[in-house]
Each structure stands twice: as structure tokens, then as C-alpha cells.
Amino acid sequence: MVAVTVRALPSSREIVAQYTIDSVTMDLRIAYPTAYPLRPVELSSTSGGRVAGIPEARWRGWLLTTTRLLTVSASGRTAREALVRFAQNIHGTFRVMEECPICYAIISLIDKSLPTRPCGTCHQKFHPCCLQRWFTSEGGSQTCPLCRAEWVGKAY
Image (cartoon, rainbow, N blue to C red; front, side, top):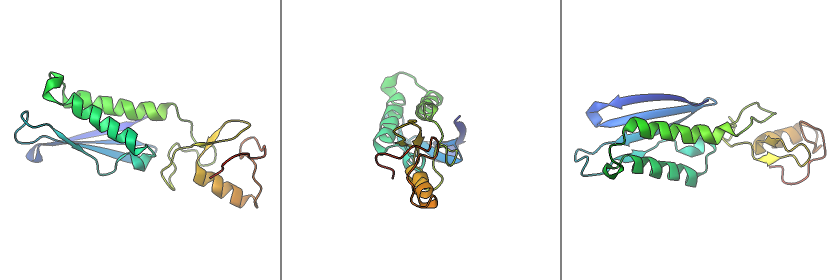
């Protein structure tokens, strides 16, 4: 589940939202210019999606969608609605993911990647860095950590 923390910073005309999943925090900053609504809001993020293994193109798409929701032509959409939509995008991405059976996390704490390497037999997905550690610790034996079948394909 995605935990969301929102802070309003009236002096700088900003709203900062932090989204936390699996002890990884992503942020979104909405800055309202002094000429708002004549000028559009500006969205930025210090962390970006890369901290959670989200492809940069998908992250930019979410920022673009959120910006569109906050434009004047969007007829009265609120920052709350935009932040909820952003959280839904994050939650939807991780809802379909299963945790890596080696480290028991969706987001790797080592390289912030998602489980993307499937076993050819059991089809369970693992983090590439976890597989690398697993194969190294098993003395070069390349078997699936879950079903113990011989690993076929790209491991890491």
C-alpha cells in the first residue's frame, strides 16, 4: 500500500506530497506561480520514479497528466484530486507486482529495481541484483531459488 503525506507551504505557494512504499519515498512538488491562474502550475520531483524502479518515461507521463489536471482548462480540478490520481498511478503500478522471494521486497533496497527476471519454470520474478547474489552464494550453481529448476535465460 502507498502511504501519502501532504504538506502545504503557503509562503512559497507550494504543495509537497510524499509517497512511500516499501520504505522508499518518492516526492511530488506542486508550485503555484504568483500569476496563477494566468501561468500554469509547475511540477517537480527531487526523487523521481527511479528511486522506486519506475521507468523515467512513465514518471514523466504521470507528471504530464497531473499538470493537465491542474490547468485552468481542466475546469476546477483541485490539487487534492491531482494528488489522489498520482497516488493511484503509483499504487496501480505496485499492486500487480509480487515481492521478490529472495529479499521479500517489491523495490530492491540495493539498486531500487523491481523484480523483472522470471524463472522459466515457475515464472516467479526476482530482482536482478538478488539473483546475482543468489547465484554467487550457491557456488556458481544456476538454479531457481524457489523451484530449484535449472535457470534458463538472462539472470542479471
